[in-house]
Length: 422
Image (cartoon, rainbow, N blue to C red; front, side, top):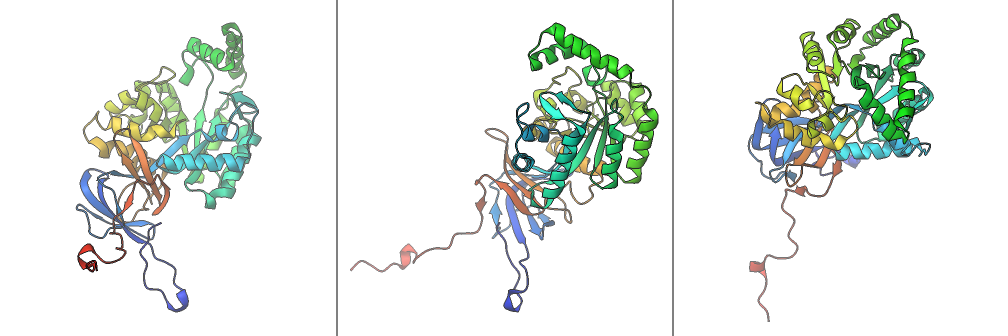
């Protein structure tokens, strides 16, 4: 890390004070972009922003983009890192460290690990159970000080599995949860409204016949009917979350009635709304909306639901999450920037200022004096690419393309000073 230092006390008692300038960057602020400016970082926070380059800077951007660090409020990759193939487990610390590295290389500085509480089952080839999920949470907590990215926990609670409520309450009491999503992945509604499409997907993923997959799906749909009324349990869970300042979200809202129900339970965020009507109703009720970066990048949902681009063009999208592919975040932002007025500043807010506001992160989310120096250096061409990531002023990822801006020390005399040959 390049650092300037203050004068040391006698015997070297005073620690180094970070003070560095990043210059010649296209700086993306909350509401506009500085074409060629500089940012000063002091002790992990942004101290000054200028709309012109500065001399004697520590790092030169060479015209690259400087964006706020990405706040990823929903990434469900960790389970696949610790179990890369069905039944094949790697040590959790190894899998989490690998994911941490990947997130940093994609510009993510704050990550909410979306972990499932759905009972013992296999979904999409990955083991998901209460014990497995709790072990991941404990491991992340134990590694927190050694990880590059600020990791937080997003509990994905399947409402048809009421026994998980006790575990969620225990984790809330221990201060381990930061976001809770109410989810229902039962086929026939929500994300899987198209039952036939879902059956075909299950058949392909599990290598079974359509008839066999149809039987599996049918049992899941019947199981939902046997669950009974869980509304009282959800109301209690919601009250406990609010009392602890934990944000409550709803997942895959598909009808006006569902949006109204979850809003009544205290949900402040609508994740991956399935229809434009649901997204519009969520906004009307004052809820934030979030969709996946892969959806925005591809221009369509893999489940045939609402396109993130359509939601953004309609002014109904507040946040982008990595979902299952963090490398999609940067190109998705750049693509959306072309679709509406406000350009890159508005699009970049989807992964910085907006999630910071929705999740109560008051110390980050923008390139602004006083906030944490969570920053992303990126290129647009020839392919959108993160070149470096800073968290609280520390470079946690760099691919070697950023150059020190200070002139190199000359070794030996300049050519004009050399003695003539004898």
